[in-house]
Image (tube, rainbow, N blue to C red; front, side):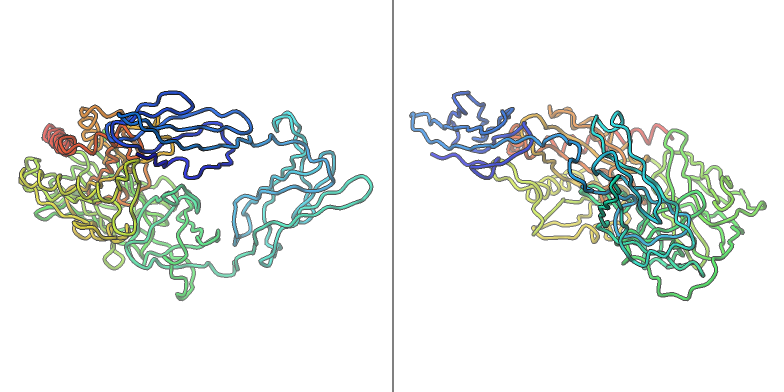
Length: 558
C-alpha cells in the first residue's frame, strides 16, 4: 500500500505559474482522493490531476484507499508567487540591456546592431560612439516608462577589439550610470574574404545559431569541401554569405578555415547533362568550385527545386533529356544575379534525391518510383528511438521510452517482413546509438522509406495526449498523413501531422521519412493503452496499413 508521486518530485515546491499537476501511482484497485476530491485511477494504478493555485501556500493531501479500506497518505505543498509585473526603475541606474544579434559576435562593416535597455526614465542615454538612444513612450511598453532603444550600423573605422559595448545614462545633474554588455564584439578583417570548406557530407547549415530543444533549425546538408564565404561569427557558429539573397550559419567545428585564402571565384554553371541507370535519373552541371546549394520540393506540381548559390547560369545550359524515366523536364533560372536555380519536373511525387559533387561537377540523383509501389521488395529503415544511456521519457508506471520504441520497432519489423519488405534497424537491442550515427547509417544504406518510432511526453499529464507524426520536407507529408490517419483509428486523440520539424532523422532528402510519436507516455490514459499487448499490435498494424495507403496513393499516379 503506497503512493509514489512522479509530479511534483518534492514535497515542498516554489512555483511561479498557477497551473500545477499532481500525478503518480498507487496500488491497482485503490482509490485516490486529493483534498477530498476523488481522482480517477487507471487500471495501471496511475492517476493525474491539475489544479489552479492561489497565491501563497497551497497544500494537497493525497490519500489512497485499498479495496479492504487500508489507507496511505502523502502531502505536497506549492508556494505560488507570481512573477511581479515590471515597474519603472526608481533609482538612477541601468537595469539591463539586450543587444541583437545576441551572443559573442565577429562583425563586418554594414552589419547592424540593435539595443533595448531598461533604466530610470526621463534621462539621456547613449551607446556605441556616443550614438543617442530613444526612450520609448510608455504607451509602447505596457505602461512602463524607461525603455530605451537604438540601432547602429557598423563602419569600417569601428574596431570593437573584442570588447564590450558600454551603454551610458546621463541625468540633468551631470551624473553618469554605465552598464557593459555581457558579450564581446570584434570586427573581421575585410582585406581578403575569409573562406572555409565543409569537412564532410554530414555538414549542415542552420537558419540561426539559436533553436529549440532539438537545436538550431537545419536548412540543408552539404557535401564535403564546399566553399563558404565567412562574413561573421555568433558564439560558436560562423555566419556565411551563400549569395546576395541568403545568409546562413554553420557550426565552427564543421568548417575548415585553415585553407589558402584567395578571392572568391566567379562561377558560371555550364555543361548540363542528364542520364539514367536502373534506379536513378541524374542531372549534372559543371562549376568553377564546389559552391553551396539548398533544395526544396513541391508535391502538388511534382517538382524539386535546387538553388546553387554564387553561380551564374550559362544561357546555353541544356534542357535536353537523355533517357530519363522519372524526370520529364528541367528548367534553368537566375532569380538573383548570383543564384542559379534548377527546377526539376517529375512524373510522380518526389520519392527522394541526393545532391553531391564529383570534383566541381554538381549532380542531383533523383530516385525513381518502383514500377508497382508496394511493401513487397521495398527496403524500409526502422529507427527505435533512444536506447542505452538515453532513456527518453518515463511514464507514471515506470515504463521507459527506450524499451517501448524497441518493442514497437521489432513488432513492426516482423509485420513488414511478412509483407515482403526488407527491414534495416538502427538498433535491435538495448544500446546507445548517437543520432548522428543513425543519420549517417541510413544515408549510406539509402532505404526506400524511413520510420523513426518515439513516444511523446509533456509536463501536462492531464490534458495533453494523443498520436502525432512529424516531418520536415514537403515531399514527406503524404507518407506522414497516411500513417497518421490510420493511427487515429486506434482511438488515440489527434495531436497532429506536423510539418517543418527539426528532428535529425527528418532532415535527409534521399527518401521519404516519418517521425511517429506514437502516443504520450506521460499521459496515464495513453500509457494504459500501450501496456496492453493487443494495443501494441494494433499500433503496428495501423502503421503498416498507413504505409499501404501511401503505396496506393503512389500507384494512383501511374
